[in-house]
Length: 53
Image (cartoon, helix red, strand yellow):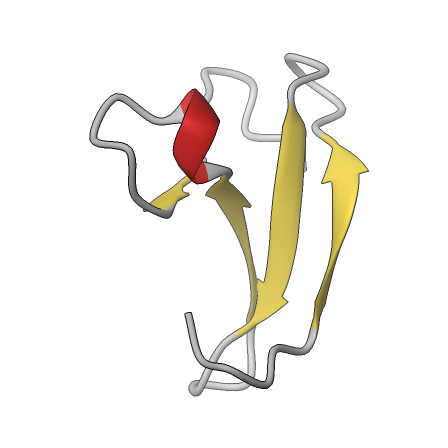
């Protein structure tokens, strides 16, 4: 993620995990898992079955 981020934390409506909503370079808001919750230890796109962010 960039040093200056435009985003906010929230709970996923489907799985209730805390996620980070980030405004990306393509102008779309995307959900990310926090590094401590991701298997890689890095920012990853949140991908749950329900898909309701």
